[in-house]
Length: 337
Image (tube, rainbow, N blue to C red; front, side, top):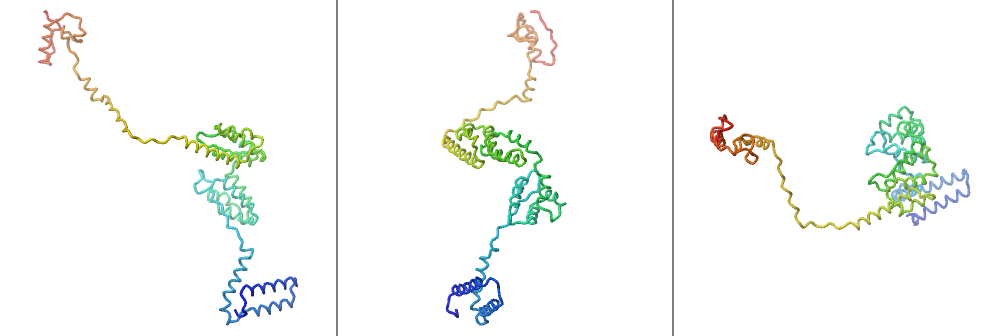
């Protein structure tokens, strides 16, 4: 404000002067030091101009800090928790997933071994944290991973994991894309344990998918059987499967008939036939049986099954004595006509 120039012009003049002085004399000398001290004394504001120049000084400081290389930093990357519990809790990850994240930290050149070990320790909770407790704080990340691999890693070698991969087939109701995910997981385990050569991984994946997939129409549409010599990568094959599954779902949605509204009342249910209860069976047992024949008067049968000669006197005798006096059941079994 005193010189009548703008802030940008004043700043540009001083920066140009600094650049010229550095270019002309790489090594500092006594004259340059005295010149810089004189310039600093000239630029140093007095007490009367402090209130006027204070905002400009703040702006200069902000510009220098924003352009400094140290201001550019990456956001801290933290590993998810791992405990080694079975089954795996919902807020944690399994060992294979956790181990894959650790590999990303090991490949980060901006981190030291001490920082890598610290992040590994921060992600561990018991019982996994108890496994690495005997190690010293100065232990390398490889020492931590060696103990954790022995405790929670896969103990099967590649010769055992590869046959498991070959015996993995599509389950009932499982989408082809989900089946491919399971195959890729099994193949990755065999690959890490030396059961599969990395250059042959895509060929084995496509071959097993064609063997284990039950959707022959899908295999024919994508012509996967003809691509065994030049197999696609996992990501390419996965994308093709998802696109084909989406087409099939859209086709089924168009073929689905519309839902008809119910206009008629549902039929009434049939009347339930009651089964005989124990009391009913007991009443049937207590019913009186036929005592005598109304034709011959003999016991044990009725008229419709009688082949004897009629005996009216015996019939009349039983009717008069038994029906009128049931307790007196003594009577002759035959009476003369």
